[in-house]
Every structure is written in C-alpha cells, then in structure tokens.
Length: 265
Length: 336
Image (cartoon, rainbow over all chains, first blue to last red; front, side, top):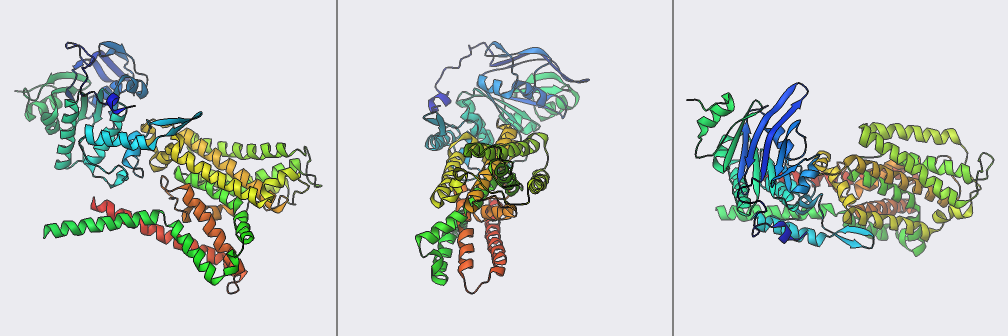
C-alpha cells in the first residue's frame, strides 16, 4: 500500500453527485422476539459527518453493526455507492471501504503506535516464499498517517498505554486509515474524554472529512453531535424518527426526539 | 517558574524513559557483570573454551524449555507441562527405539525416533492449545493437569532407564557443538519469527490484549493452538537433547525443569502478563542461570547443598528488578 492509495484528498469521489455514499432501504433487524430496527430508510452523503443518536436500546448500535458487517439485516437492503451490498462479516465491509473504530478502541497497550496502527495490515516484503514484515515501511507509513492525515506528532515507537485518551482515540482512527477506507464508523468516539481531548478528536474528524472521508459517529452526546455533525439521524425504539441538521435542531429538540420520538412543542 | 517546572518535568520524563529502556534490556549488562565477577571470584569456571562449551551444552535442554515457555508467556499464557512433555516424549520414544529389557524395540531407526518424539510433543501441545484456546479451559488448570497426567504416564511406562538407543538418535544431543548449535538456531529462528512475521506479532497482540487482538481480526484461538504446539515441539526436542546428553533416557527425565524454565524466561525479561519481552533476552536468561550454576559448582565457598537456595535468590533479585520496572511504568502512566 502506498500513501497515495491511502490518501483520497485529491481524488474525485467515486459516487456521482446525486448518489448517496450509503443508502439503507427498508432495513429491519429482529433478534428473537425483539425488533431492534424496523423499516429504516436512510441516506448518508459522501464527505459528511453523519451522527446517529438515540437512547439505550434505540437501535443505533444495531444499525452501526449492520453497516460494519457484524450483523446482517433480517430484511431490507444496504447500498454502497449505489450498488446493493451484503456484508457477511466485518472483513466484507472492510474490503468495500468501511472501517469501524469500536468504543473500546481495540488497542494493544504493550505495543507501540506504529505496530498498533498496522496490526492486521502490516506491509510485507517477500523473501523467497516468505512474507516478512517490512518494519521500515511500517514506520514510514504510520508516520505519514499520523502527521499528514491526522495532523499530529506522536512518537511512533512509544507504547500506546502512555498516551492520553484523545490520542488513543486518534491512534485507533489511524489504524482504520491504514486500511485505506472511504467510510469510517466511530462508536462513541468521545465518551469518557476530557473537553480538550474531545476537541482534539472533533478537529481530527473534521480534518478527515476535508480529506474526502465519510464519517459516521454513533453517540450519546448531543453536544458532540451538534458541534460536529452535518446531519443527525435520531433513532427511537428501533425506528428512524427524523434526520435533521444542527441548524434545524437544538439541544432541547434533540432531547425530545430521543426521549419521546417527537420534537415536542 | 513554570518554565523551570516544565524543564524539570521533561528531565524526569527523560530519566524515566532511559531507565525503562535500560531495565527492559538489563539482562545483558547483568550477564556481563556476573561474568566479570566470576572471572574474579571463580576464574576456573570460564577459563577454557571447553569449560564454556560445557556450560552451554548442559544448558541446551533448559534453553529449549525456556524458549518454549517464553513464547507461551508472550502470548499471555503459560505451559506448566513442558518438562513433563520432554519426559514423556523422551521416554516413550526411547522405549520404541531402545533395546533395553524393558524397551519395546519396535524399530531401531533413528529417524523413526526423531519423527516420533516431535510428533508426541506436537500432539500434546496441540491438545493443550485446543483446550485453552477453543474450549476455554484456564491455562494453569489445563497444563497443571497435563503436567501430572504426562509425568504420570512416563512413570507408568517405565521406571528404569531406557538404554540401547541408536547412536544416530543420541547424536544431536551428545555432540556439544551440534547441541549448542540447535539451541542457538532455535532462538535465532524464533527471534526472527516473533519480530518479522505476522504470526509473531499476532502472538504479541494476543498476549497484550486478547480481546483487542480478536477485534482487529486476529484468530486468537489459532494463535493459542500454534503457541502450545510450538511449546510442545520445543519441549520434545529438549527431551531429545537430554537423551543425547546422558546417552540414555533417565527415569526421571524432565522432572523439575519447568521451574527453571520459568526462572530463565523471567530473568530474561519476558513479562509474566504477556505481550512484552524478547526471546533473545530469554537466551540471556538461560546463559545467566547456567553460568551462575557452573560458578557455584566450582566454588570452594558455596557447597552443593546451597546451590538451589542461591538460584532462588538470583530469581528473586530478578523479580525485584522487574517490579522496579513496573513501578516506573506506573509512574509514567500516572503522569500522562
């Protein structure tokens, strides 16, 4: 992989202007007797930050898991760049260009930044029939991801346990970027972060949007989504009750939508 | 004032980082210091090439077991049954290829012996790995029960030495240069595997955080099975080396070696909690243990009855040094 491959900044998005990056049509997901999602229709445009919010059990994690390939929908269809897609596992979603950063970040504390970023996608070079990790390339690419795409300066040889919460979130995003995705889904990216760390993560996500990525965040925090998102989808008891923008909704409106499924007065 | 404080903080942080790097690689300066001390106190220990060769040769079986244990520890697991696997695989194969009265003498072909001993170690290792990695049995309970079962099976098979072994079968362990070469090749090979292959890094990832490793797409159950399989095979080769060293299969082959193997790995800087350490450091641990053992044997001050106690003290000092490392890590963590 070269950094040019991983950097879509100068490329024209593959989708046509009127085609959504991700379109969800009539998606339903049932676990036993529980209907987790019911008849969801949703469009997520390219180069946007789309936030999914809702109370516990509203279905946002289920929808996120369908988009990231963890769950298959019981009914309905997901379209990616206009093509109908079926993700049987996260690796199918990854192959298509969707990466997920889970809430626990899945970092290996004893390993350094570069190793964490490329765990699962190490650049290799061939030695006869053997494929050996190319550490020089690993550190070069990790440096470019951290410096150019995330606009940070982290010591790549430092073990990740020594970094702050915000920096750890960025390292996890760095690992997603190593797979050269078009879409990154982040589960609760700023939960348990300080104000400074939250601002750091927001700044980075805006920066990635400018570089052409589509970002989906799943969040409890209404302040977060009002500050960050271009569009906000509100789930209530498994139904998508509204898709709005920060200009059309304030904190009170979002609270009403989350708690009652309606805007209120 | 704040600038001074900042400079002080940076100086403290740099000092901590330097200390941490030193402590992570401390086996080599310690080994050097111990060798210098031995040259002064018990010079005959390392006075000739032959004496050095003898020290290393005697350390080959334990070296292979330290390597086996180190790879298990790096994956966040451990294997109590390594000494017992060396024992059973050595004894069973000795019974098959030996000509002693109690032996079965099925074949006198050395290659049957090589194949069989490795296969026995592999089979027990894969079973341990499957039970831990797939069924989910606690590694302590799994390998403790297999320590007892496997050691008991060896005793049930034969309580006498197995003799009359093919000369080619005992050759690798009986020639010092060959035996030492096998140990060094094993360490270099696994040192490279751990550093330069995706499997090696997957072992570190699994040892550091098994759940995270799974989330990034590593099949941790496969890694665990492979780690125990490697452990079993290396243990069996250690059994072959003991057999070659003594020329027979001793009745108590493998007994008590697991403790030394743990000691070597820990002294060599392998973390008991997984994910941290280098197998080359473990080689340093093996050499340190063997050199000290030999110096004690040559010492006129310390008697044979005191050697085990001294070994225990060496291990304890190593543990103290590594706990210092942990407290420095905690201090750095607290300041971030």
